[in-house]
Length: 154
Image (cartoon, rainbow, N blue to C red; front, side, top):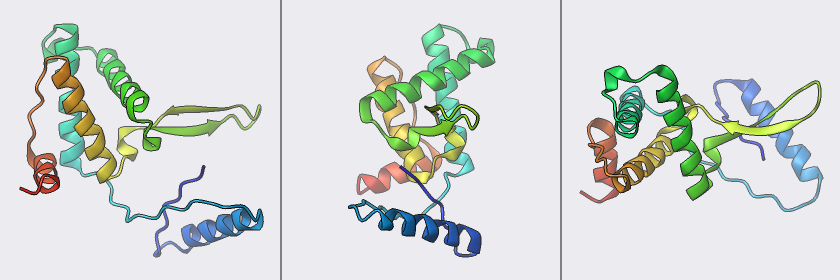
């Protein structure tokens, strides 16, 4: 599976996409193409997500947020991404990497910074539900709350 971000201002991205599309079509096999407007997740959205990760890590490890180590926060972020992938199988949570010397490929977890606005929102919805099931309520605020209210028709 390939994913492209095509920016009309950058002719190289357009040409790369068109070249890859032509190559796929030459195979003369059915192909599924999904196109959507790309909007990067915002700083406030990512900031709230990271606050939630710290809150849940503190809850899980039974420590104050200030007592958490960087590795405990990182491990919690990895755990939450793995749980979301296991439950929903969202492709945006992983990316395929290949060792150019051996040709061996593997799927690794994608950085939160690579999530677009909708993907970040979906992951945050998962986090709220998952953490609530574990006994921790994560407060909606800012842009996330606005997006949530819009999706609920409020």
